[in-house]
Amino acid sequence: MSLQTAYTTARVIETLENYAQSDVVNDCSRDPAEPSRTAAGAFSDEHFWHTVLGDVEGTWNQRFNLEDVFLSEHVARVPGLYYHPQAQHFKNILDVHKEYVTDRWTHYSPPGKSQKILGGIGTLQIPPTLEDWRIASVSSGNNASLGIPVLIHEEVWQHHRLEEGRRIALLSAPWKQMEASWAKRFYSVRGLPKGYLVIDNPDQLRMDGGVYPTIYHPFTVMEYEQDGSLFYDFVFVTVDSSDPNFRDDIRAFLGEYRYMKGRHGHYLIEPFVNNPLLHDRDVMYHSPEELRQRDASANSHLNLLVERIKQERFNQLTLDEIKIFMDNHLDVDELKACSDDLLINPNAWFGGRRVYDESANFLSAVVDRRKVDELVDILPKYGLTP
Image 1: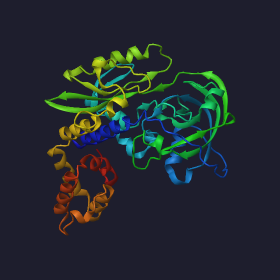
Image 2: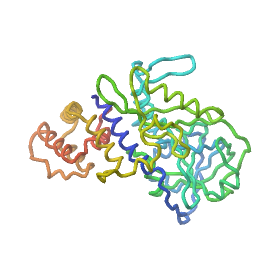
Image 3: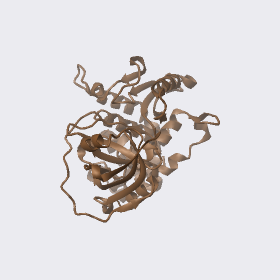
Image 4: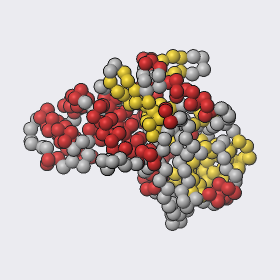
């Protein structure tokens, strides 16, 4: 098992944990009014995200003016990830991960699809809250995976008769930190802010009147066999909102894809939380509620599933690769900092010896506390490129 596979598995585990909470409806109160600030323009998705990523703390409560953007009811799995420096190396997909190529599209293997997801492709559709707020996205390029999250009050939604693909001539709204009830539904990537543009007044939007096609990317997680072992990878599909048959097309593709190349795959979670798509025989958990259910031994389905994945994928080979990386690229102070990131007191393992010895002590403490997945997930901060 490579570190790339281990990194993907860590993201899969987090995906399952977030999916289990994705239908939990919470209140979403209005924030107190912030002092007005001069509005900043953003002429593209890329321009907006480079502005925000370049000064995360300095852009909170900044008002942005966006022109000629398109609304989608789908939001990026990790908003802004596509433009984050940490995701760029995932965009160089090796030919070995291309199962076949036509003049219209490239068909990727499961590891190739995971690489695309880790590079920023993938979208969610999240139900409104009890307090009548909706989270959606706007994009200058009609692509929800690259878009900007917007929190819209139901009064505004109904006033402008918003829907998938509506063109907005001008949007003016402040960039706010997500409340916890929304933030927990999105996946964490170090250095990426969890925020949205807040729209609570119809006057913040000037509509164009047109409805145009958008692109979004629902995804799931597939468990499949390869060389006698079980693997876990993301699988996504590209949806054109103008296609009236997209649900039948997706169902057909996913049904075929799980058996290609002798994979014998099984999907773990339903890709459409709000409007389930897959048949009973094709997916293990049809809803977040089902994943949260408890069995006779009082262990949640989620915990059982996560523990099984950890046992199957975080094996001795992975630990050896992690230790080699730490021995060659980290000093003792960085090992201690890494330990702090994992909420493990360095005094619990540090013995004042060589890096080679201390990395073994640290890794042993990680294994004892069942934090290998968390370790794999934070190692890129210390220079690891999966």
